Image 1 (cartoon, rainbow, N blue to C red):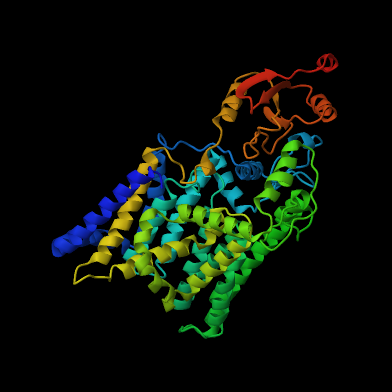
Image 2: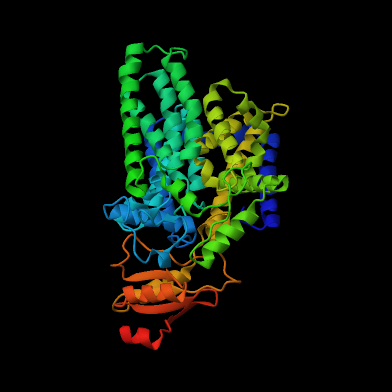
Length: 563
């Protein structure tokens, strides 16, 4: 919600009352008007893939048109910089970078330094950002992946719903994720995992209807994207899909396909693409961790984490680090976030529902609740609902609560919303279409929410997910105009520093970069750092005091002589 609560409540009531009044007082006339509008969209929806492409380009064009209100996002969250490092690495034709001898000064969150300098995250999001960087800016990759997500969701819904309802689902996805969501307004959203989930659930019913190599390849591609974007949630998502697929292959699902066709048209191409995906993941792991079975995320967890991952686990013995920021983050903030009590369980669970509610829904969706029970009893939706329940259960079992963790089931959330609308539209009151009125009010309220968010320059209902500090960018622009190379030493206040506002992030190239960011550590490490980069102008910045004041680093007389 982006408006003041009282203002939004007034708008909410006005919209609902207006639609109900029309449905009750002039039902025939209002239905004729609304149905004429809906028929126009239905004709477009029947054009099949045309609607998919229209949704893709609609998201691109609308988001570009809103750049004066919602400019290209500035990275600010630790995870974003890690993904941007990955993209920069890929663009340079590498999967990983060699470790740097001065890595202790450059140590940053969610990045491995040994045996390689690389992001800890799976590569799917990095590939999207790398595409954007190759085209001119990493955010272009975000824009294209978010648009592709909406198109993929529409394609998936066409396999489960009539054409006009599938198109409505695509529109809902475009409105919810294509304007004021951190998925399109930052560098760490869930678009890639959502694409993977949509491809899997869109391919399976098509394969059941008529086996085709194309759909088998799409199914394998979806699984590969899930494995390389959200491996844990993707694995849970694929369990019901795998059971259903085996059930189909055994002939237990109604299908006219012969066993030979199932084998040659589906199983063989699917096995080939899954083999390639596993081979790539093993090779990727080997290049980053020197072990094909060791994921970069696992390596980073072993190196830095002492906090537990699942609710029932207890933290390990605390580790010690080379800088105070890591000490505070891993030994203070993370352990205090969750302390293995029932109170903490309810706290993190409530936070998950709150964050996911703002990411996947809007207040107007409450009007759809009367149609929701029928959705869960719909036998045709057993497979997507099973995938939904598996992923949600896994999500509730872990401590951390990013809404993009459950991105694989984004298409299922949209499917549930559309089905709730369909069931709600059958509700009448003495022949008056009150259910249809509530469904239309819910959709209009989503449009209102998106429009007001854009007008207020709100990039996401959860404000901290896409609001990077422009001061760091201003410093970069200032130094870029100066001759030579620069080393910026960042010194934090130990007491007042915000652990989530870190400035020490660098790209894939260290030695050749024009501007480098380093931590102010101990005198010995600093001396080694300055000696290594003796050809650079060394600066000091203290973001907790003045994040715009850049000053020459106060070197000792001997150090100055060396330079």
